[in-house]
Image (cartoon, rainbow, N blue to C red; front, side, top):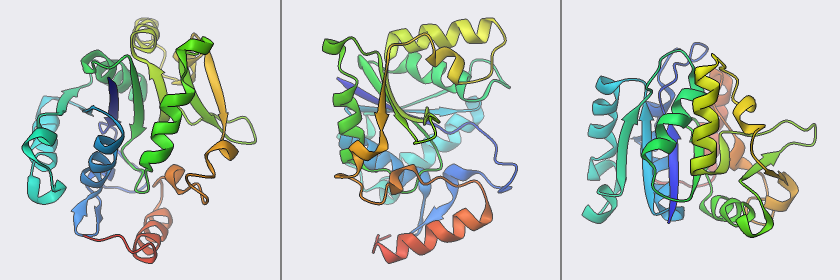
Length: 222
């Protein structure tokens, strides 16, 4: 069983709006992401910042008019929230991994409009326990990790995140250091994503404008 996790609990100070609810093609971004993730995994866990926020996201993501889901799709989506506040993606990952049931889980930030199901499936393959790996993490040429577009061995990464929270650690790369990581060159993903758009995220208004222009250019439909 494969799991997918969306970390939707963060606040965007630079954009000034909730990234997960940014509109693309007439629907909230989180609905498009959920649709892609359900094509690559057996279940989806959405992590909110608190219980009230989780309820709001559930109402949006579970709306079949927004996601074009069947009933079986909807029951594959679960919602939870950070157990501790102020710890960013470390807390979100810990909560999401705690609810997920698959041995491996793909974790994504909530601001990735061009997620690619084939790339996600390839990362699951590259997190090969037969070769001793506990994670598959894309790496940029400068060595920078993409921890919120990665696959993790669920139990190991959750335990590592728990230790980070207990020690007051907020940096996501710290729990990652405890795992045996397959550092995946992005070049390996080019056959599935020639422009590597699956890593395009939304940090500024300029990013948002560019993403919406690309969305129309790629012919995505609402």
